[in-house]
Length: 376
Image (cartoon, rainbow, N blue to C red; front, side, top):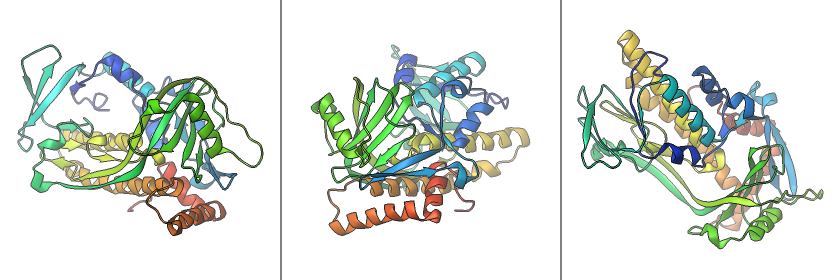
């Protein structure tokens, strides 16, 4: 986006190109994410290989209930296309048409964050010498453990977080998906999600206790548990196949305020984390960089900084909406070991209301597709 606007930018990536292009991450894209990838010219594979989804299915009490997105969102839908593939596309585009992109280059720190020309201290892999580069602005897209957030004065910072008493065991399996659309299942044995990476590769998840080791679950054990949690009263069967990859993901919510200090602007996991139940992490990060790119374009093209000054507040409104939705989806479908039977009954009642009430279905569909209300 910056390159297309004639703004010079340098990108630092601590990992190797091969690592970034193989790392498995989220794969559900909101319409706005798809739109911006098309606008910057990074959709040549997305348009060919992405899988449009017009709805999801909610499974509880042995029955599935479909939520149709376009009919209640004025046509909005989501797209299945793995973040791994987005990274490949953006890297290829950046190396071909954009500014410098340095792999295996670790940013050590940011100096003079509140000065007119902050400096980035970095070190290339294999080098014992730090190097410095000065700039006008820093986009801190370096994740939760990065150095960008550490450049903020502690007295300025507030953090809000919640850790959930369960995790996800996720698998990538060499078998066609069991459903044409995602299935979110609530079961007394725990949550399950049937998803996909392509028409031939399934991406499925089950709720497991915290501190679970992925290798402690055998293939048959995983498939048996998925079958129990996603079984229906109509005889539907789960597709089984070889498991190519399995991993455990802890569940947490986190927000850092503010998202800007001086000339440093946080984006993505550096500023916020959501549990994956709502499929919001990648989309929130894209939303941040859209807002920051628009603000920088205004600054360099017109000389005004209104959007830069409002960046944090602008992003946080959207982020808290996504945090709320992800929190709700997580509570709705997971079996919380700390919850009372009263709380569990309430969540089941909420699910029944969603499938029975048009207004409740509309709220879920709008939130899932990223259609946040103005001013919320």
